[in-house]
Amino acid sequence: MKKMGLMGAMPEEMEQIVAGMEQAEVQVHGNRKYYTGYLKGVPVVAVFSRWGKVAAATTATTLIELFGVNELVFTGVAGGVSACLSVGDIVVAERLIQHDMDARPLMPRYEVPLTGKQFFATDTALSKRVFDASAGMLRQEAGFLQQLRENGMGRPGLYSGDIASGDQFIGSTLVKEAIRDRLPTVLCVEMEGAAVAQVCHDFGVPLAVVRVISDTADESSHELAIQFVDRYAARYLHLIIEHYITENHT
Image (cartoon, rainbow, N blue to C red; front, top):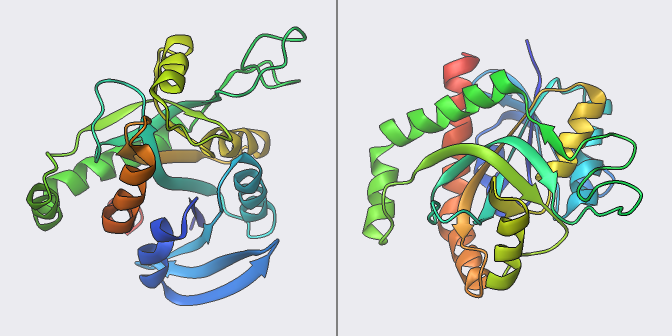
């Protein structure tokens, strides 16, 4: 049976997942609390990674090397870059890129040194299963969708595509538009996923990244993101993971 790693970059994102674990035990490594246990009988290790690429890479490496996870699902929120996205939509990553990587003139912009890569792909099969689980959640969780409607949100959309990561909270229309102009395939931005994708590539561990749009990466983002995380993020991500495990591991 596979051991699944579950990562989130904020404690609110992971709280319901950890609360639902059976036989949960905690181990502390590198100032992170790693929760080992079971979700619906499936062995999992869940951890709040903290913000940023270094924090995420350290956490992912520990999950793989110390805890022996052989698939990794990274959940969280993101700022929408594509005009097609609205707050509450779900994006499952196909590829990830660091929008702040720039070693020119030694190599092209965005290329990670010594890899020959700008984009790191997620695992196709695992990502499809997470996408399908997200679709199942949107079909079946009528009560949650009703809660969203009562708070003025439309029915969430579900997308797959490219995600950009950087050590920067994007809260500026000008910065967002610059990223969109340079990287037109990118749907949303966050601060960790591309680093985790590089780690999983190096270790040969399948990765899926799923992000819920919390804000529109503009001047209102700091308020929107905090409100969304406080009200919805934990429930969103717990439901997605619950559907993923139910549909694929039980």
